[in-house]
Length: 274
Image (cartoon, rainbow, N blue to C red):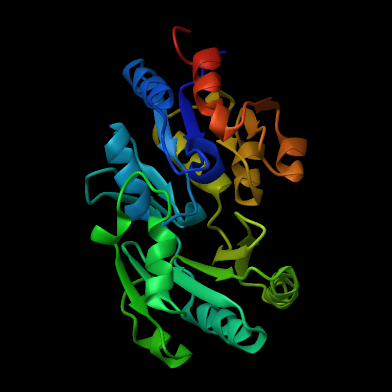
């Protein structure tokens, strides 16, 4: 089988624990791209954050960001698809956070709105990163949920965050009462809400159709719950060795961990010189 497209998650997959793309992985990505494979960053992050890494690596294919809520061409204004989440859903989620003591933030295409101290969030963004996202991403504070109605841009994803597992459990219980959003997670400390049609699985299918690539010629690589839809959708679904148990259970193959350059291993096995 000759695979023509590879969808790759960022955190816990493409990036090491220290948020780095290793030289070996970078070379494998560029070599695969030169051979004609479509290398697609597929992340829960805001588009601009993913774009910085794509530019650092030298990738030219579209980016899937916010768990599939937006598909955007690298370096161009062309947007393939967006699935904004209704502001009513954002407000309901923010009110839940206020009730139970969780933090929250949400993304538009290029902006982040946070319901907690700005400096804490800036330091979180900068922690052990290879690029400086704060120079390119506008970060704003939300002092009350009423301010959400005044935001003009489309909101693409809401993240609920807490170090307290009981708070996350309570948030998840309440969020599941809402039937107009897709609920997933990229960490034991968070819950992520998008439009009900915004999933990584749907997004890679959209791109594959655009490039006339059958799904059985698509590889998807990930480590967390928000990667499950694309791992199931792809012809070859790959879980990282550091991935969640539930992700490994649905994968066709398990590669090395993110710190052992598992992405490069898959590219070398299935793409390079094939």
